[in-house]
Amino acid sequence: MRAAVVEQYGGPDAIVVKEVTNPTPGPDEIRVAVSYTACNRADTLQRQGAYPDPVKREYEILGLEYAGVVESIGSRVTQWSVGDRVMGIEAGACNAELVITHERMAMRVPESVADAEMAGIPEVFITAWDALVAQGGLTSGSWALVHAGASGVGTAAIQIAKSIGAKIAVTCSAGKADACRNLGADLVLERSPADWLSELQTAVPQGMNVVLDVIGGEESDRNLRALASQGTVMQVGLMGGASSSITTGLILAKRATWIGTTLRNRPIEQKVLAVQGFASQMLPRFDSGDLRPVIDTTFSLDDIADAHRHMEADANVGKILLKI
Image (cartoon, rainbow, N blue to C red; front, top):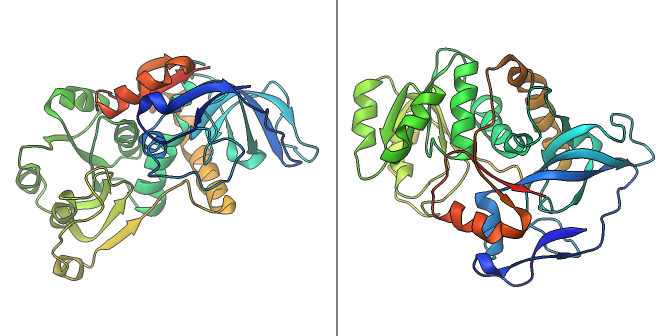
């Protein structure tokens, strides 16, 4: 099969699309013929040697999500048949023509979602739902703040919050504000250089019940100041830096909860719980029209270096997909 392989760490041109050995499914696994996959921020970090795949593989193949059809099944698989349309997340190796996954990690693609859109769902929608709802406890009538509102996770978070009856504020660059409003964001704030915190506190003085932050760095202290009493900060990424100065007393005064979370490094059973929880609660909302994948650009697998450049230029609104 052909796959996007990192043979040495570096810039986008370090990625080599080459023939590699086909993966072999175990008894509880399925092998998927991938139609579409995606480029995520984690892939750009892995390419630079900053976010290693926790699974040791023969080849270092990029990619955290896939969508396609079941090509073969293991001897103990009961949930899937050859030809089923599936999608899902993995710790890596999804930027390839074939991928293997445990049968309980795969999700059925909603009927209303086209083949060209289906890889825009797994990573960002599961991440947003898990952070906001499953761990963050967001409920109808409460407020969420999401940074990078026009990113893949951000566009998914806006839709999920609105679909459960919550209210949502987002930060983004000025040029992406309308895209966030069109998705349903209740309050759109320019993150930099504007003073988003003062504007947020004026508009919603009671504070945010959940903050989903992919930035870290200098936003960390402002997140605490934006938080409501007994609110939760969900730290999903650190695009703005891994170190910051915070007012620790705010954690005590607000009785705040601060949770660091990733999907990639979790044990398989925890991943299955997240995937199946999302699938049961959220996948029907794609067919009802409450949720939809937001696709920015689709590149061919051979143009994966350009996809990484597009991601690193912060030029996208929604997902960057790769067609296999």
